[in-house]
Length: 414
Image (cartoon, rainbow, N blue to C red; front, side):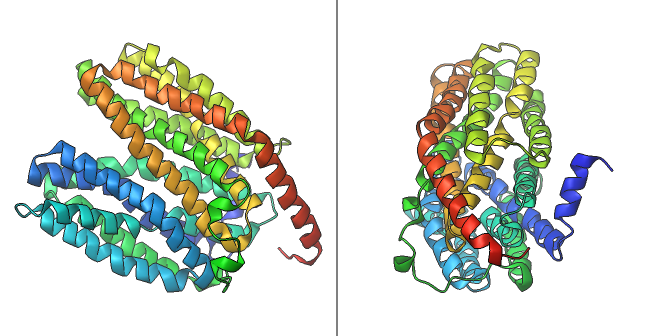
């Protein structure tokens, strides 16, 4: 067996690990389909790209702001108690959004429903990573597990948008949202039934654990980095669609987006299995530096072939930033604040993605798609700048957490 592949196989051998990881992959598909599904539904029923963009942005931003507060309750009371309540709010809100979209008028109600649906969006990635943390905290296997989850994210975001497009255009306009909501509900229901791998709830109110997790050392810094990383994702995706149309090769759109993701998959697979001597803060800064360098040439690529090559190389820096950032969050925050902290970081990614989409879209409409790649490059440089500016606070947070781990290790069992 390939040594790199063997690292992932060993991680999955823990009892229950394979089941909850597969469940998470299934449930997480919804997140990658929700935006595209909403856009295609609103365009089909209301014939308005502007309204679709506004609703999608509101969905993402409300989720980024409210979901971490809900995740705080998950840390406090447990996944099995809070996740069903989230589903009880989220599923009816999506169904209401679908119904109202098919009716005439009632536009303000669409915004209310988008806000409610986004606010109750489940952060499946955080739920799964919290389970990995329970199993492998303090071991090298945790980094490999987090790398695997980043690869799952990549696979989901490669498959989700095309699947949503096929369902909405070939079946009926709301088919993508209905399918996505169904897999989320089924997947999360199966997940909460897996009690043996669920992190133990802290049972303590936030007032006794430091309030908002953004106040914890390092969390706001990494969230800021991930906002700009989300800008890289959102701007690249939309700009590439516009670039392919401008060059008369719209059929290449999927290929150009895929090579970017494939580059990230390859890098993430190798990065996650390798054990570095450099500490996590250094790994994050190194990955951020690489991202800035490889993203810079995108706006200089004026043919689809050159862009495809540049995108493949640029993708190599994405997964290492994701993996090192999430691994660093797991290391520096207390276990009873992990789900909330990871949800803030994931929410930052969503906010950046929405912002990148809006900014790049405006530039594509008024200037050119090639020019809009400057947004992608700028966000990539921004990731490095923020990572460089916060390197010392992150190192202090890392050292403080390491000191606590050393003090705790004699009584820990893995």
